[in-house]
Length: 369
Ligand SMILES: [Zn+2]
Ligand SMILES: [Zn+2]
Image (cartoon, rainbow, N blue to C red; front, side):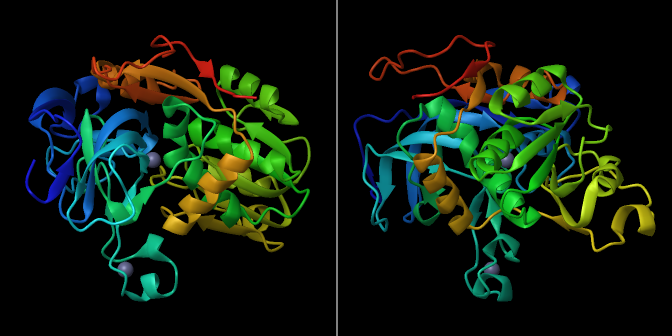
């Protein structure tokens, strides 16, 4: 390490990681396993040994080219749970050995009109982990200390990983849906983010209807307490006060709008959506229905959500994969073959064995009560 960092014991020079070569459909293997230098943290950064990294649909968009290339050869991954192994010389408030969360948002300018208005998620100069900078599909990564999260107790590393994007974005999507107290919420698509958001809404007393094409996901929704679970293009059994679209499928926008009661709101959670077909004003918008998007999150959203997750235990359904099978995890996500959230787990180092790690490929529903 350089003299800008305080290392904790020996840190190797090289590590295993995955890079996006040329973005392409996952079937063409755009992700390549390689040996990379262990990154050197800048003065304001932490060096983090990765313990678990969630696989998010946004990683798929980065890998397949739905999002433009920001950093050629980027290491994806922005749901990182890790251990601080070195701190930059300018860092205060973090110490070697602490558990830390690394999420999508990693830089904002602090002075544009959005930052000044408390909407740093819309910052004109924002930067993102696993898109603008290398992320957690590797044994080590870095994070600016000001964008690192403290993590709640009561969860394993694997359970915490999906909270860092799926959980935070779902929380913001729920806020943006403006669900009234005791209201009726429709959830379209039921993957990692949706299954966490449904639990938050249920904890607030909502009635939740899940609409998704996967039979296994419908079963999980009912187990978690949804009032009904049907196919994605079906109709819920009652009009909705609010809906969240998690599936990146634009044709579901009119379907979900038509399911709203007067005054209802549809919040679109994804960073990427296929084209929305023409809307019919009477069927889809009139009677003061609202359609809105969700763009990333503020750090405040992240802290509030993680605080909620600490006070109200969420059952996090995960499918762990060894880091060596990151390409398979991404292909499974693309093919809708993952229940809950896929999470990459690097091989444990001999000095720090991981115990009780679930076997790869087996969905695991966590819970500590
Ligand atoms: Zn800004
Ligand atoms: Zn994400």
